[in-house]
Length: 124
Image (tube, rainbow, N blue to C red; front, side):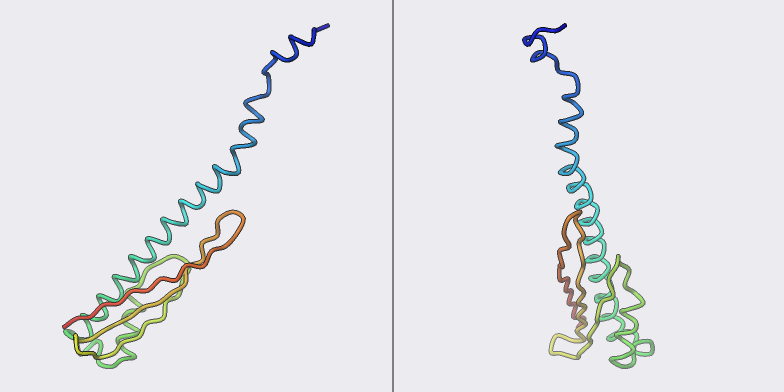
């Protein structure tokens, strides 16, 4: 039979307990990191789409002949994760301006955070 001093010195199973305590925080950081990468990819796609559409409206007038055609062109140029952006095109003093807005839902393990994304481009 073991004495009480030897029971206190026994450290079997401590790694399992420490792993169980650290695992939820590690998974939250890991999943959050993936969703941050998806959000940045989506924001980049949104910026690319509005820049291409603003240039199309000013330079390629046969393809982007109207506001609706420019907005549809921007939609075809967009690539992102899990969102459907809304594009608006107007003629302003800076030239042809296209704005895209979307809401990215970041689902981090225990809660969902809605992050608004906006991109604007103006081509003279």
